[in-house]
Structures are given as structure tokens and as C-alpha cells.
Length: 506
Image 1 (cartoon, rainbow, N blue to C red):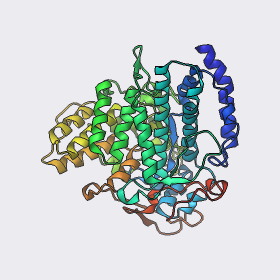
Image 2: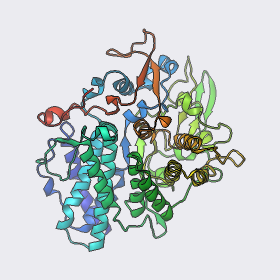
Image 3: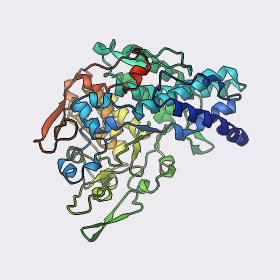
Image 4: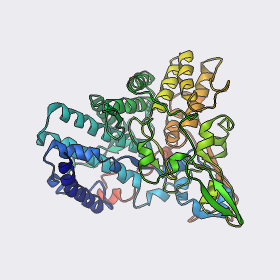
């Protein structure tokens, strides 16, 4: 098998690289006409494609990071060093002028997720053409459907409006099912898009592949557990709490390991900087130690390995987010909120400015794929929404026991369903502050329940062609039902499709 993978990598990866290189400017409309000539001849070739996790595990979603109430837009930091906000225009495209991003020629999230869809389609379109066992083929098929479903879900929750009854006829995504450049590229409706994703989810759930193989957790590959975990997330996002609970329970029945922050989390390599002539030690969690994949692969809570990448290298927490934590007893705050991280980003000179950063994997990545922690939170939320408050609190407290110092503060209590829901959603915000907050804001603000709405309001400088620091700061608000919940389609796609792909309207 090793010789097959090496051989295959020498041909397929060159072909995929040429595909990516040639499609940067016109990603959907001009897929390579010779894609069918990519050399795939055996089941081992297709297995090698899906084993190449480094091509799939990262999603770069600057927009979702910049738009939420968990990301701080600190005027004082901007005054000291504007360059630490490299993607400031993402903020304004949501809260100011959508043309700022609509005129962007390349969006890495759009191109990155459609690359994964292309890869999934390559596998799906090739299965009937290669030799291999029936069950092995079935599992590769399920894994490819999971890969495509995940990518489509990410795209839909950024470039489309939230899924609601009133939005079903709104524009959805381009539903790519082949590797052919001749496939139509018009946008389906939102209802058709979600039906497409759900069909992929159901196909992925047919997997019989185990998450654990020969005693090793292979969370970089699709499995029945990964499919159940993603299904739980998908159904939660469309407010189907019964289905979400079902699949969260299935995932946890198969794998329920949590990292105990009391015994397994530790500090790692320190960073030492000089601040106004005085050494300052920045204490990082051990998961920060490696800029490669070592710490990511070792994070045992993953059901399906995915990380959210921020090109700005600074997950800058808002003060409101930091206020959500018990800063004395919550070990997530102790390890992940790194004091003085601003010095690492160059704010250690005169005038210096101290501000923390949220650090998980190195400086640029946080977990975003389905994890056991997420499953406990989905289970808790679904149970409380079905008025099973006791079991809901039991589920969330199982997670808290692994995140908090021992004491009376570990177990959440509530007088009624409303209080329990509020506390569980608050716990979700603490556990998944950057990778899931945008998803949560979209669904909570459009689920017909006003009690869980999230008000997005940020005060910052106005923007014309640049950030206008000479003007007084203004307050920006993202109201419910705003069309700005849908990120503009990258400008490159519109002329390349000869007008077939239509832009979002605002």
C-alpha cells in the first residue's frame, strides 16, 4: 500500500496543484477540462486522496471571526498599531459596506471549501471505475459525502442567509456534483442547498468505518462517529432538536473521551519579550508548542479533524467574552486566555499595550470539527429545549467537571427551563468561543425564540476608503433578519460565470 500511495501522490497531487493554480481567478466557472484524466485507477488511489488530511482540515474564515461579539475591536490597540488588524475590512463589510468584500478578487474560504467539494466529487465520480471491495468502496463513498457535506455546510452558513421558512426561496449555493467544467454553475435555492447537504449527511451516516482502528483514534478520517457528530451539528443548526439529540447520543455512545483540564492540560513553551526594557514572560498552553500538526493530531476530543484558521494570528477576545468566565476557577480561561499576547504581536514598544489573546493550536488555529465537548453541549441544549432540564444539566456538568477546578462552582443549577437554557448557551459560548459563535448567532437570532437572541453591536471608527481615525467612533449593529448575514459572493465568480452566478442583494 505504501508504494501505491507514494506513486499516486507523485501524479495526483501535481494534477490537483495545477487545478488549483489554474482556477484561482475563475474558481467555479472554469474547472479544468481534463479533470477526468487525473490518474485514478485503484481503490488505494481514492483512499490516498481522502487520507491526505492536510488538504482538508483547515478552514480560513476571517469573516465569521471578525463579525461576532466574541471578537474584540479594541480602539486603543488600533491607535497603537493598526497593522494588528490585517483584515479590518471584513468587519466593515458586515457592519458597513458589503462592496468592500464583494470587490475582493479572492476569498480563501470560498475557494478552499469548493476545492474540498471538487476532491469529494473526484472520489464519488471514480468509485465505479476502480477495482476494490464492496464494503471498502461503500465506506469511501460515505467519507466523500461527509467531506462534501461539511464543506457545503460551511459555505451555506457564510454566503447564504440563515435557514428559515421565509428564506427557503432565497439564493443558496452552486451545487457541484462532478469535476466537469461543463456542469451548470447557477445558484440553487436555499431549500435545495440544505436538501443537498442533508442527503450527503444521510449518505455519510451509512459508514461502517470505526473512529478507533488498532487502538488509534483516526479522527483525520471520516467514520461513522464523525458522521454522527456532524449530523448532530447540522440538525442543531436547522433547529431540529430531536434529530440533533439522536446523533449527539450516537456519537457519544461510540466515543465520549474528554480532555481533563485538571490533569491533562499544562503550560508549554514560554515566550519572552522585552517590554520597555523589562523582560516579560508570555505563558502559553502546551497546545501552542508546535506550528505543524503535531498538537492538532494529538487533541483527543476530535471526532472529525477540522480547525478554524485566522490569518491575523490573533484571536482577540472581547471584554464581554472574557466576562463570561469564572476567571479564578475556569481552567479554559487560565490556559487559553494568554495574558500579554499583545506583546507577541508587536505592542511591546513605546507606547506598549497589554491585551490577552485566545490561544489553542499555535497562534492561528482553534478546533472547529465535531468534538466530544460539542456533543455534550448539543445534547444539553436539545434536552433543555425538550423540557428535560435535569438531564440537560447533567450533560453540561459532565463537560464542566473536565474544565473547572474542583469545587461547588462546577455544577450548574437552574430554577426552570429558561434559566437552564440561558446557562447552557452561556457554557457553549465559553467552550466554543470562536469556531461556533457565528453559527450560533445565525441560528439563535432566527429560530423564532426571542429569548435567546444575540445583539451584535460594535463601536469603532467609521470607514470611507480607509479607517477614518480622525472621526469620532460610531456604533455598528447587525440586526436580526439583516441581509448582511450572507457574505457577498467573491467578485471573481460573477463575470467568470457570464452572469449565471448572481450576487447577494443588500
